[in-house]
Image (tube, rainbow, N blue to C red; front, side, top):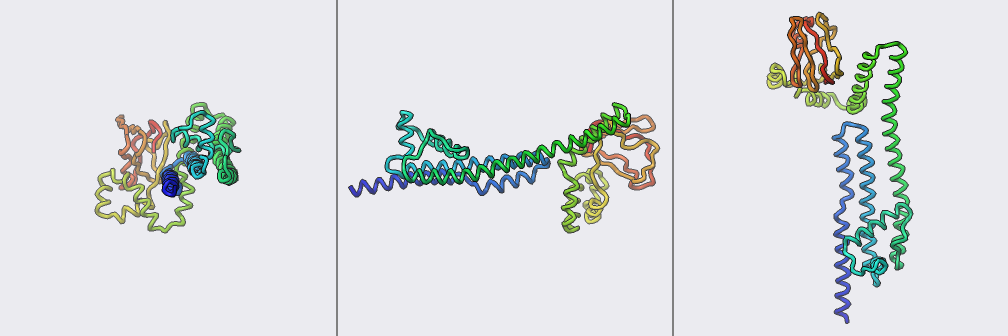
Length: 326
């Protein structure tokens, strides 16, 4: 009899180990670091908000998994098999497989976030205590989850409505001043593209944050951002190798990104630039039409208006954006 009792305890202990192995599969505390790393690589604020909602949902499902494993373990620790045996008898299948038992327990744990369920009920004092504790914890977690999702959805709505409101104001201004339909369309398309780009990069916010960073670090940042584009020109490619410290200062003080929409005229023939600018195309297509009649289509990696770097320059052609360009 003692030997049989020992085997029974060993069997229960083995079952508990299986339960803990299931619990160990969940690495809850690593999820936050994974989502934070993923958010750092996202440029769209809307996508970040959606990621926050997905993170909260994932955390709630993981918590439900943990509760389900414990709920199943509590049933295994009872002498009469607890809710597992009672539910098996109800459905007429005493030998339910582990998959069915797990999803039944998961269903029970998820239902605690919405008020519980009657299909599976506690059948012992230990199960009753665990059910009460789970219900209280689930009530608090559900309130936090709903408030978090509501906050994220509100942010997403404000983000979308702000852009729509600004574009609507611009459209009304153009119509009140009798601007032609073709020009209205170009201006609105340009404004929409610029706002989308600024929202993705959030340049103003980054500039404010970078003001708190030391200047040597900002120099390194701008060098890393702009040097791959500058090195497409043979002169600067060699200059980076010979005098990298000078190119770092050039990237820090003299370079930035400019956006053009389809149909924009970057400059005209005969124009004397008040602020000389040398262009290196990174995205899109440009068309350069020289006064001599030749036309050259510029694709990413090409450059234009190099003469302003060395001479007092007057443009001898027109530069037009064939599509949205950067």
